[in-house]
Image 1 (cartoon, rainbow, N blue to C red):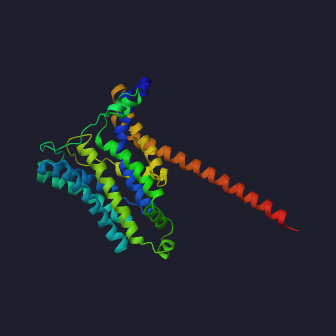
Image 2 (tube, rainbow, N blue to C red):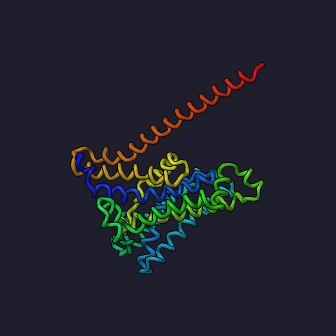
Image 3 (cartoon, one colour):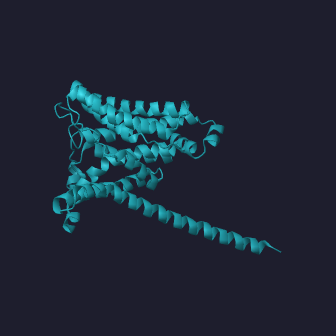
Length: 320
């Protein structure tokens, strides 16, 4: 079993498994930076996954399918924004409502279009291609892991870089982060808090749409009921570890990809109970999150403690 971890096929699968969670984590990062907590990422991914499949079936055009799915993701995010930012509804409750609507609504639409409550296999959906990169695949080890991945995987990696540049190197990104840290101060210098929050929701909807499409049109070629399987909720844990930083979010998403791929190999090479194995990725992420937060708390305690000691010593020196 240990030899599996040295297999290049294993690490190829790790990156593939990371993709949907990475995109969902980027979605969570954006709304976090704007001072929001979006529970509806799970439902948004699910609806967009079905939207991409159905539009591709009836239009036979991949670009139109992507456009429709992205617009659907933005629309759902804006609906959440309308009820929470304009109507002042509780964001968590509205997020749960969207998730419930997505869970039941996608099955209802699936029955109407595919005649099944489980899958859309009766419909011929378009898929995103796997891309082999000539100059990359010639590099030993690295090429075998990185080349040949699905197109959306490369798009996700590109989104990580672009999101970091947007947040930390562009004025609009700085404004968005300012809104998240102190909306009153941002408003006082002329930054529109509402516009920045809706901009973050637009990014969130876009990333969620690509995460959903990867599941139904990338790793698979059909939609399956509740196929997101909690990945949208896991993105919130990834965001808690990354604190809104997309690069750290990518690294934390790799933890899920590693644990998810490990469960597949455990099913193949061990006699462990399948239900127990299926729970391992979520338990693994939870344990890592607890450890990371514990380390952060201890470091913060040491820093504040040493600062307090220095301040006390300085006050003693200043006393006559």
